[in-house]
Image 1 (spheres, rainbow, N blue to C red):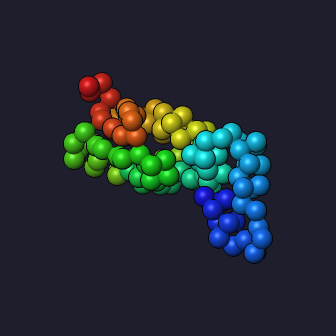
Image 2: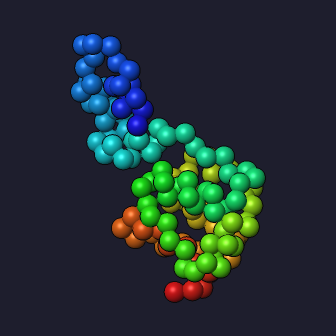
Length: 119
């Protein structure tokens, strides 16, 4: 995303491919990986789990699914504390859900949230 922003604001003669190649050297060739690394983090303190799950899903391109309306309502009532700074998106999911009664399953870009112990 940042590289795209730089390109949009770049002066005439700017060589986008040089920036792209340099970013690939520093962060790897997969733009999804380095774009996620460069994206600003989410300060979870005081936000609800539901807000964080929506944010994480949007940032990662995942589709968020709740097992049922009661699970979605539960996520809206859980207030988060602490920080997930420096964690990958999936590791952060594990951290924010660890003390809740909820669990997640991530498959092929689909994020499923359900009650712990549910299948």
